[in-house]
Every structure is written in C-alpha cells, then in structure tokens.
Image 1 (cartoon, rainbow, N blue to C red):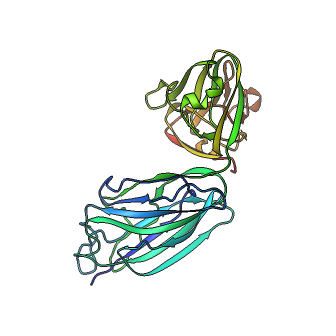
Image 2: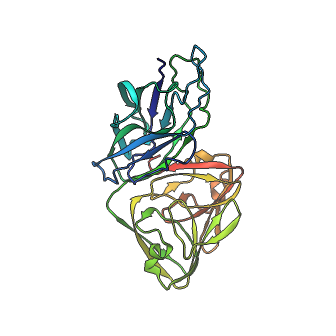
Image 3: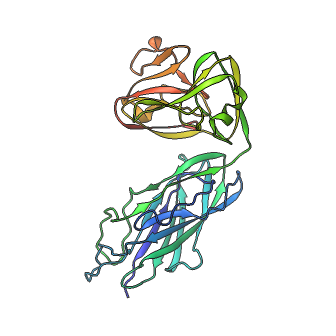
Length: 353
C-alpha cells in the first residue's frame, strides 16, 4: 500500500485573533483556515484549524513504480510575528484522515520576530493513492497572544516540499489554491486625538477603529467637514468615501469647514504594515509611531522619487537631496503621505524596526 508524507511547515506571520473563516469551495484543492475560536487579549489562548478541500484528486507526481498520487502531499509554510503572539501547539483534529505519528518542532531566532512551528503527519492511503475528493481536517493550532496587533496570515511557498517514496524536486504544486486571512490580538481601546485646520487635511488612522464607517471615525467632527477622499493608485483617481469606510494604511484627504479637534476610538495600535505601491503616486497612511524617514523606508530604497505631506501646501522629502533642502524628516502618527514610486514595489515598515 502506497504512502506519502505531508509536511506542514507553519510559520505564521501573526498571532491571530480575529475570526477567519475561508470558503472551503473557493478553488481546486484549496488549503484554508477555519473554525477560529475568537479574538483574544495578551496572555489569552485561541485556536484555529487548517483544512484542505480536494476537488481535483488526480495528481501528477509519480512514485517509484510510476503510479500517480491523487493529492498525495502538501508543504505548507506561513509566517507569524512573535511580538504579537505565539503558536504553542499543533494537534490532530478528530476524524482526520492522516496516519502515523505526529512530529512537532518549534524554533526561532530571538533577534527576529519570525518564528517557525512545524507539524509532520503521515498520510493514510486511499483510492487509488492518497486522498480522493472531499474536505479534510489537517491540524488544530493553539495560539497565545503576546501584544495587541493585527497582521496578515499569508501562505509562503518558498521552501521545497518534503517527499517520500517519490522523485519530486520541490516544484510548485499543480492545481492548488491557498486562502490567506487576517487575525488580531486585541487590547484595551485607545483614543487618538489630532487637531485639524480649516481646509484640506491629509490624515491616516494609527489605531484600528472599532467602527470603520467614515461617519463613525469622524463622529467628533460631525458638521465640521464636507468631504473625505482616498486615492486609487491603479485608476489614478480620487474616490469619495464620505459615506464609505476608513482603515489604517491609507491616506485620506478631509475637507474641514471649521477648525476642530478630531478623536476616535480604536484597538489595537497599527504598528506594522506591508503596502503594495504602484508606479506613480500612492497616498498612504502611517503607523502609530513617529519614525525618521532616513533609514526606515529601506524596503523601497532606490524605488521612489520623493515622499510628500500636505501642510496647507505640499512639503517634500527627496531621498537623494541634502537634508537642508528637505521640508521634513519625520513621518508622524495621524498623518497621510504621498509616495512617488519609480516602479511597482512593496513598502514594509514597523514601529519596532
């Protein structure tokens, strides 16, 4: 009877604590997280399950005898930020189709936040080799919160898969879909306050709002603003979100009709972000901290022409200009910014970095 080994190299990029339920039928042979037990605060414990939906069981990886496996193996890698939380256990789910012993390992470099958690299980043989069509549980992960935060849970396919009894070389899996999610470790609600002047103000949200409706985020300014816009870097057009929503990581132009103080409630603080920039102008938000531009936009070094803010007129930071010619040197919480990208790239930055 033929067997394969399934390797789950789990490096989850956050700890995770907002309910995430992916569709089990989103595509052929879909790996997804589901049955999240709910948000948790630092020191609390939560659980999330990993499942696979097999709709196309006809594999193309032969064993040593020339037989083709029907969905014979997986190699799953994700990332998590140990400053937000930790995956402390990986256990089988009752009714799982996997056979053999569970081998678990947990490691990481104390100087970085990315930590790995692996679970290895043996796959039970099925007709004719491996799993046929169906939705199968893989593993249940125990997650402990460390600090408030919200991050993406994204599958990473850089590592080659593990193979047993076959001659496979780590090429990408055919006909696979991985569904990413977002998780949150909660904390006590905070209040952010900022004075806004008459006219246009370029702002952003340093806290995740408890209610992201524009009217709720700007409720303390009710009657004192007339319009709210964001910029779409793909269409290169402004979009009116006065009756829409507002979220961290995005810059917003707010037209203030009477000088006032804006405040809103949010949790957790927005302390890290990874934002895709398009060639040309991008209007972005900023983190819940102030950072010097020099040395903190290294992820896009050489890939942008200038960084600009609005202060009753544009002020510009040009990375190759002498400091004396730049209008500002810091990026501050609550402000929005323009970044003129030379090419498509990703801005990755953290308050702790």
